[in-house]
Amino acid sequence: MKLTDREVNKLSQEAYRVGNFKDSSTKFVYQGKEYYILDKLNEKGVNALTLGSKEDYKNMQAGHPERITQAIISFRGSEPLSLDQVLQHTGNKGWNNAGKTAGGAVAFGNEVKSDWLDNDLNYLIKKQTFDNGQENGFTIASDYVNQLHKTKLKNAKFDVLGHSYGGSQAQYVLTTHPDIVHHAYSLEGPNIYPCLTKEQQTLVKSGQLNSKLTHYLNMTDGLARLNRDEYAFGINKIIYDPNANYAMKHQEAATYLKTHPIKGLLKGNIAQIATYEQLNGVLKSINPSLSYMMLFTFADHNLDRYQFGNDGSVKLMSDQSFSMHNLEQMKDYLVTAGVGEYSAPLLLIRGEILLHAANRCETRCDQIIRQLERVIQDIPEEAQSITQKAKLYFERLMGYGDFTELHAGHVEAFHAELEIEPGRFYKQKELETAEEAVGWMKEKTAQYVEQIRRLAHEFLKLDEVLAEKMDLR
Image: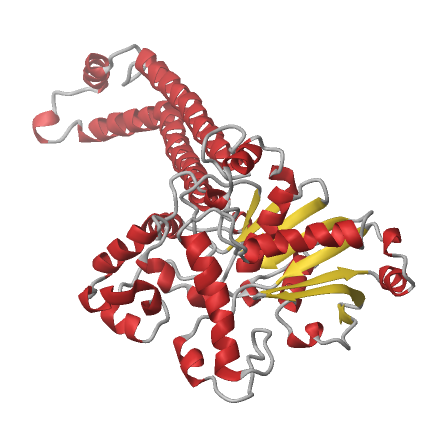
């Protein structure tokens, strides 16, 4: 059975909980459903829980893991990167919020170094190849799944998932073991394509893995946008975040850098950075998808920002109604934030803008055409009414002053001279021409709106199989 969006979110959060990695921990309950821990990984900064049913757990305990046919592996993401927390974290307090127990500042610092510097920075940001002969968090995750399959769960297919760094690990496990991975779920995980080998990139471009990978992306999450200037694969779900702010309010960069951890990545360049343009230049020299806007969205890197329906499905951007102003603001935000021209978020917004423009054009044109139709339809009746009023007016004037020589025949003769066609004060042919013009306008407007809609839907359904660097499905 395929996991619901809500389950994916919940199980990703469970990989951050300290208690699940204790030897005595065997299960947790979510919405009345029990998830049993079949195996645990805690090696060199890589943490993962292998989960199954109560029956699966009994089989493990009875020495019959070969009876297990389906399992879930949840990879933990990176430790929160907060300068204040790193500097103030002392003693045996431990990092309870992120999933680390005792060890104090040293233990926490080692985890931050392993996650952010050894893995996130060197690979996902600097785009080194995972398979470069050096052990790293991604190869450890891949080897874990491989060994688990070979030694214990020989008959099992795996659903792999994770948040952030864990989501990127899930993507990588899929590319290295597509035969045993049933589906992979990446929540805000940076795109891993540039870190794959040429052979793996060829596999990705073949489209074989698209249906087996789901990305969950928050458009204001800087880490989720990482490497979205590169080729990507899989199904993308752009989530609706009611707290997302697309207003690009640039603040003084030097002040921001004094209190945020990215300063450690920029080394000796801090003193020279005073404006966001300078900061953007430094960041893009490291990775083209990095930007000033990425730094201000670390707070959006949070699984609590997801919203779900009663059926467990996540609320998506495409299900919401936005004004043209909002859509344009989102598009400008994404362009400034370093998102590639053919990335899923930008294509989505561009498609939504086109659909919105088509709907607005159709509504406005329909209003104008209806007004024209009413005017044309009213011309004969209005003309007849005005004619009668004019005749009555002139007839009332007869017998007064200079009009004493006028009589009804003169009035009829006068009106006969004014009439372009007998009995009318207008040309019937021109009225018919106006009606034809309105009909033509209606036809062309409908065609134009349909073309815009068709183009918009093409933007919304394009993927890597159809066009290079398209990652919208």
